[in-house]
Image (cartoon, rainbow, N blue to C red):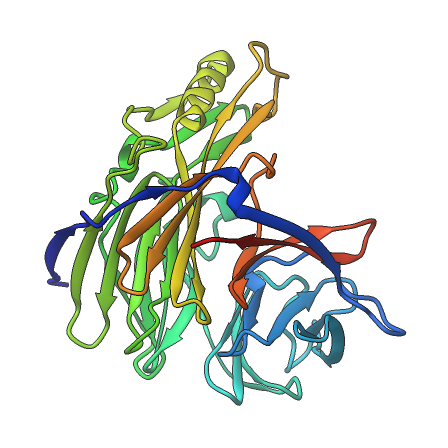
Length: 370
C-alpha cells in the first residue's frame, strides 16, 4: 500500500496549568435489581455518538449492558449465546459497532457479525496465520473501529511480538496493512524474556480513534506524543508533532531485548517505563477539545522475580488540545496516583472507570479555568 503524508509541527501557545485547575468527584452506576459488570474494557465497549449511553460486555452473564451516563443507571441488557450456530465463543475479546443494527463480536479465533437480538448474521476468520499454532505464535487481527465498509484495527504478529495498523474489507474479506510502526520506532521497544515454555513480553501499543469529522482516524502510540490523522478515502496521513514542557516528547532509549536473563529483562522494562508513556485521545464534544493522559513511573530498586516489576510511584500529566489537535495546555495531575485503564470525555469532564467494592463507578475530573 502506498501512503502519502504531510508533516505539521504544532507551535501553538502551550500554557502550563496547575493542579488547582482540577476538580474531582466520584459517581456510581445504579444497577437496579440486576448486577453491573464492575470493569470497563476499551476493546469490549463503545458509546453512542452523543456519549450518553455506554455499552459494555458483561463476562458474568454474557450480556451487553446499556448504561445511561446521564441518569447513571443500567437501562438494558442484551443476551448473547456462547456456543451453537449463534455463539460468540466463551470469552469476548473485541466488540465493535458496525452500524445501528449490527455488531462485530470477536473471540480469540472467531469473529461474528450479530444483530442486537443475538442472531449471527455472518462471520470471518480473524487469524491471518497460525490457526494450528499456539496463541503466542499466531498472526491475528484485533478490530477497533468500522469506517465505510472496513474495520480498522491492529494486525498483530504474536510470534514476532510486533503489530501494525491495518483493516479488513468486509466485502472482499481481505486484510491490508498500513505501516506505521517504523514511524514510531516500535522496533526499539520490544522486550521478551524466555524461561522454558514461559514468555513475558512487552511491545508498544497503537491507539486508533475517530477524528471528530469526515470519518477520519487518529493514530497514536504509547511511545510518542506524535499523532497521525488518516483519511481512509484517499489513504493520506497528516502528522502532528508536539513540543512538551513537562516531559520529553517521546521515549528516547533503545530497549530491544530477547533474553533468558531475568535481571536484564527487569532492568530494561524499568528503564523503558521510567521514560514517558502516552495514552489515547479523549474527545470532548461539548468543549470541542481533546485530552490526553501521559505519565512517568518510578520503581523500587529491587523487583520480585517472575513478574513484571510494579511501580512504586506514578506521575500523571494531561495534554489539552483544540479540535484541530493544536496543543493548548499541559498540567500535572498529582491527584491521580495510578494510570487510568479506561477513560473518556463527556460534558466537559474526564470520566475514569473505577471498581468501588465490586460496583461500577467513575472518577470525574473537571478542568476549570480554561
